Length: 146
Image (cartoon, rainbow, N blue to C red; front, side, top):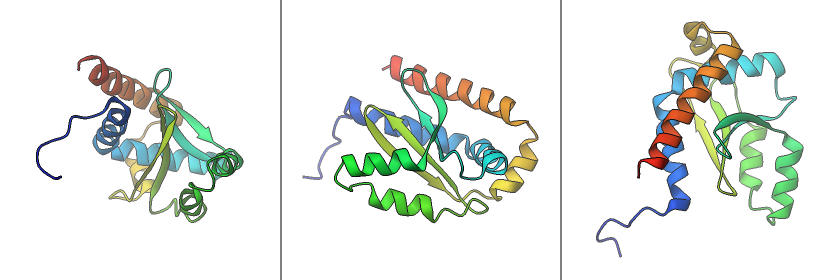
């Protein structure tokens, strides 16, 4: 049962690539998260990374996540609780969207999101643009090269 390495299914590859991107870009993602939080609070919803058709950042309105939860027989109830109890001053919370599935992205950066935002020193538009360029390079290149 545990012997041998199982081949990676294409359906799960996006999750691994997204994890790798998040790990490599935590300070910038924390800065983006904090900057968007300062600008909008949670009025627009949770920030998401939509991988289709090309990776880009989106907002996932709370109402849309609630409606999706209802359509999938309340299997996202835990996700709703995490969104509701997010502490933006301490942790980053995003939703990865790919292949008809979602993935929770949550981490507590060191230093805090606020300090990451101050240290990165970019305005939100520049930060969004540079992160989208990086994720396109990392996700698209890794998907096409295998």
